Image 1 (tube, rainbow, N blue to C red):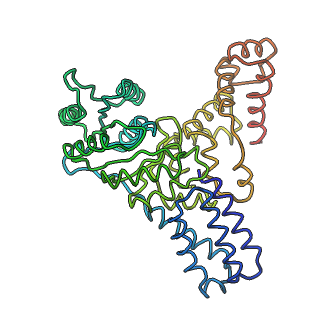
Image 2: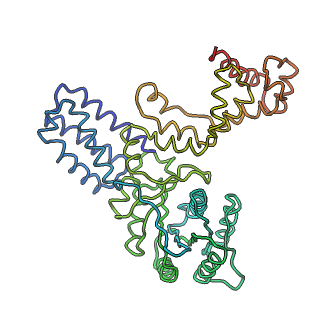
Image 3: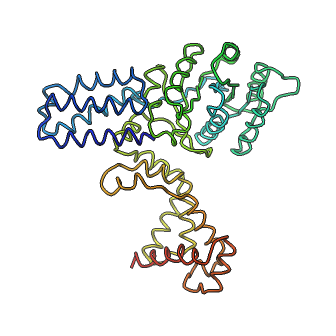
Length: 428
């Protein structure tokens, strides 16, 4: 997320720090490089123009040119202006005074509406709400079945619909009535999409809007499509009046131009970003944290929040005691690996680290997630005694463990036993 833009801006600021004194000339050169970096990151040209004008207005002032640390002043100004463009503060979901709150999920076909509906339902359930979902896509045969599968995966209710309910309006009205009867406080309406924006689609969505009076109309866009996502969001807003955007596949978008542009172009906030395929890979969008990541400052707050949600505090304290007392076993190591997996993709976690010192070298590291699975499989194939004391693992045991884990004896030799030896020696 934002990797390419972050690297280019880091080079600009490094060049500024190399200047003995900041002048109008090298400041103009830096602004040109910043402009090119933003355009190459697929940021909307109107957004780039506004951003550069704002930075220039503040950065070319006498107080900055003569500042004790002018390059740091410029970074501060760029940071402030990025936050303004991104939306100044987190835009939270709105809820109706009288439940259920209806959220209309809209977007083009293939943008990830159904998956995002499931992710949002899961996020709501984890944050004190009781959502229900309904698919009103009566045109694509697999659409409603897809939402049923999603509902089973996340353990949240879905309104199936009666055989006589053939239209989106019939399904939506019945789903709202059912959500009231079952005491659900949020109804997520997964609507039909098209390969392009057309009048039939908009008429149907406008009818749903009139009938349901939704508190949120969330446009789902694919971050990988860049400015096409921004243009589609703007068009939907003009014709429907969206209240926010969910940008999917942000973990695969190294440029980030859509995320930077969408608030400025549409006037509506980016509320959530999808950062992976799993149903827990949906995060509220924080403009200040995004600005930090763009400028290479990392996103430690999001990292801490993930850790607090995924890691058992009592287990962490117990693990610390075991390390101190030299009582760390392969069983403990396996539990630690499983805790780490709950935090999400490791590459995503590394992306939250500041790009400074030794951490900077980690940014380009490619993590083989299957390596963790192989280690866990090897440890799972051991007996309790072997996990407790890896020194008893001889040749015949290694062959049995390799066969049980679908690996080789060499892999059994190379992985967990070495880790256990390191863990024991590191606390002596």
